[in-house]
Figure 1 (cartoon, rainbow, N blue to C red):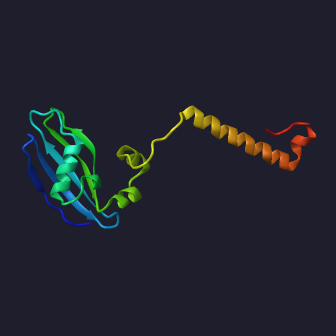
Figure 2: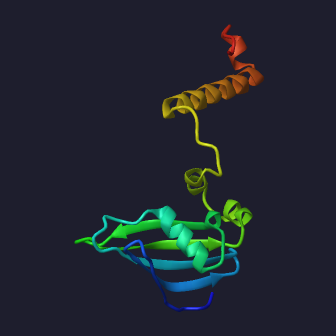
Length: 147
């Protein structure tokens, strides 16, 4: 990890982007940083705009940039968050958590409700116990069938 410097990016969109605590993380193949956005007279700045601007500044593709954890300061006009700029899409898939990949559209969304999953789990558990008892011959003595 290295390189602590500040970068000020003035934009014509009515906001300024600052980067702090920029670190090169070679183990995870990424740049990681804290970003400060100053946006007077604006409610906030979209993550897509920030991605594009960071990609242009750090000579990367917008698809390799992840912006998250944006918090607006009380009173508005300033937000702070985090940004990760990966070397390639493959490293994003390798190191980002599943929920984050789902948000980015790189992982398929979960299907089925929580209740369905729970019922299926209990059904499998019951089947496993029945098979276990049938294997011991305990249920056969009582005239029960597993199923």
